[in-house]
Image 1: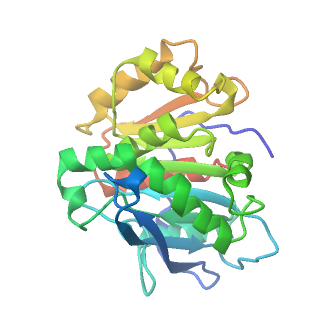
Image 2: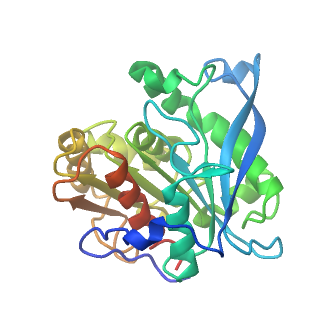
Length: 292
């Protein structure tokens, strides 16, 4: 597998990619069991949760697929980015087109939610931050094993050891509160993921703290790669940029546009705002580079 390399600026999504094509992937309603977030360790309250799963065109159970987890932001849910079966979004069409033209590697995309007891949880900022911080429990213990059991991934089975061994084939991405969830996933779940793609959502400007997260998980600088993105007119841009710059000042993080030389790269869209269009372009730029 070729080492990851990024261009010098963000690439726009071709407008033609927003239209549906005949050779298309499909969306699946995926259900799995987990537990209420704040009492997760006690496992007192079981939840039956829903995610939207994208399978690329010509999905074949005899082929292994990389898995890209795409988390929504505030005031959103698991249907926000790809839609739902029968109501597909334009970004689902983008994936279909990019894969059909060989721009993007065929992959399974999982759109979950950190919403807990209510679909409105993401509308409460303070609650959403706490749920984002807790989300790794559900992700690694419940959702990832369920995905590994149901679909053909690089994990040989749904047990924790095999899922961890497949970490090179897992990515976690999100915009805004989804980026916050991405950073917390980085903090707690480096055993499960190599690639992280946060967009316009920060958790700290303490670079030493970010480096300690890696040390605490017994990982080295070349065990992960972070592709970050934002826009100059995005209200989250100043705090997000401060976090990236603070990380750059730590020996743990080596700034480079490729994973041969580094583990952190940041692209900025001139005039980009905190909205759907820029978020989707951030995702697209990460996804077309992964697993080439």
